[in-house]
Image (cartoon, rainbow, N blue to C red; front, top):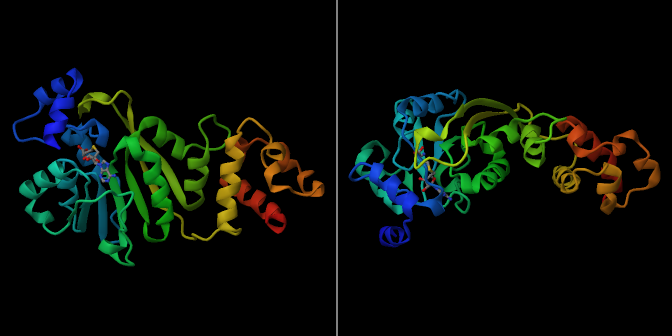
Length: 280
Ligand code: SAH
């Protein structure tokens, strides 16, 4: 792996490598590796979880452990999942406290119940940006086990997740996440504190699960309605939801005259309730 990276290394990567200290993990672009170099920012991100109501934490993509080191100071059971063998070797060497808790796996494919069983756990990370959206969707699938989630994405994704209705960036991720979590955009982090620096600003957010996880409508249908509506976000719901083949007396309702970005999570639930008796 090391070898092929060196061969492929362009100028950009080479200059990043020259900034790295001897023995550091070499940043691999295809794994979305941008290592945080500012300890103050790392500590601040580690401080975004409340650490109450659960005893276990999963960090996704620890890299060289800049964030992990602050997590280990908390009185918690910290597990990390890292796809990169070189980073795993680095962590094993530098963080003996993580022994048996470093999982060399792809978060998107791994069944985390192998680590946590049926227990609650928080997720944290300076996440790999190339798979941001997939991480959020997987987190939603696991919501029953995840009371809290915080960390860093590219700024635009973090903002989109926390956006309210009525805004251009409000979309599928905003509605689905906010159906189950309170979403807060916390702060922005500039490219200059990463090695190599990403092309965009980063944003840190926190998601806190709502007390009541169950929706007062069919959940599968809710996901389908939200996704279908935003596939044609400029159209009114009457047009974009034609595929549901609803009777006219239903679509006469004024809610169908709106565009998806005008609907809060609560109104999407209301919409799903109206569609539900007629959905096949
Ligand atoms: N948290 C570190 C590294 C951030 S870069 C820091 O702040 O410096 C993102 C990290 O995610 C890299 O270490 C990369 O190897 C890892 N990663 C990428 N894809 C992954 C996946 N599918 N599962 C687990 N880790 C992944």
